[in-house]
Length: 260
Length: 367
Image (cartoon, rainbow over all chains, first blue to last red; front, side):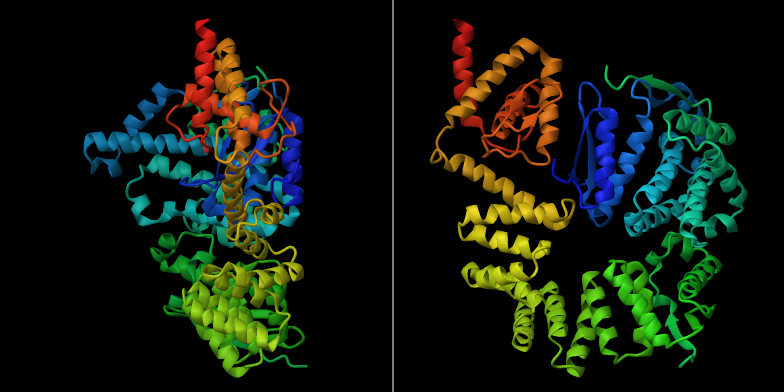
């Protein structure tokens, strides 16, 4: 098959996904999404992995594809037992109701407060599910795709900018303290990871100045002590983070067989 | 050996906060954080170059003073910039070029590279000013005229752009970038006039995506589809996930559909009718879930383009055994979409063939 992307290293990762999982990878572009890419992992009723790169992120598209493939390789390390993060709906609603009563959200009507709290709680869980594996894949790509380092830097730094919007007054003023702290804690681990890779002190500046340096180190240690490239290591890290952040009752793991 | 310090002052308001991995709103809300971030940003840049750097950030300006260990500061900085630009690393090159330009405003190499970088970033007024200054200082700088022409053209001043490219070509008739860009402007009014320039530019720049796309698109406008298609294919292969590749894919899709109809002078394709009829029968037997799986798999494969004018059976599916031609797969997908997503655009119009196939299918059903 012809190369799907320009980078040889990214093409090798695509081929590795196809070999490991037994499903083709289709790479193309998509408009109107805020994330870097939309990835749909194959399942028997949709027997293709689809990676759709945002048209606004084409300058570092090859890195995005490489990162998505690295993620698939970790999640599919055991194709018969692919982890699926499943929020406990009742408990998430209970958590959101409690957050809706917190000071920053009291300024809104009850309905808006609950909707906002639920939205923030779901965002927090998404972050818990995705950030550990994002950190892992940043590392994977750094070692497996050295030629993509400049693209990786652009992509990661753009993401760091987005994450640090948490410190902007408009966000800080509406986020309940617990949600804000949990979110910033996870972001600080991402920043510390990149700081270590890039050798730059800049990513950690906002986190250091607000007292999150130790938290960043603690969360990152949970990743460092589980270096296996397996889905099991990933779920253990998420559980460890959730334990430290007090989020472990809000979700459970389910597992699916990729070929059935 | 010149080891004079290299010092410059930049206004804070001229500092592009998007160079930092911290949100601009967060920085503006915290002036101490902003000062620290800018200071560390420049310190890191100059640390990489060796020597020592002093960076002081005041309320409205950044003061930088760099003492290189050895060598000429201007040359060291400029060599570093060129290395970064060659790798496409504008992010790191920009502050160095900005510093060099602040210190050496008439340096031709700095004007050329900084002007081109600004132009690539869409900062066109600033780019035009620097490049105009360059060609004033060096009227024989063919590549300078080319870069200026590109900045003019991007700034929607095509007449001045064309004039600049023509000057560049007078100075250097083998300037392939001037050829390519002049051709792009000429092609808008008269594709035939642009072809000789594109031909030569494509010969000189065989791996340049923009040149190949311009050439292919120009050939298409002249109705020379058979020559255009391989050029567009090559253009896409150079970097499949790029803006230019997107344009080339769109052009090829349109071309493929025109050719498909062209083969029967705009009439109904009997082979497609048979493919559709076969799909309808297969789907009747397979049931809705399996039909959906097959349809979605083809739809996903189709995102990368299916070669519908090549009869060879070069495609396979995970959800359906056998080997298929591109047109066969598209026909199966079309029939599947009529079941699962009848209001969704299939990306190709097979409605007449579908109507014929449906008639045959219904006749068979009623027998």
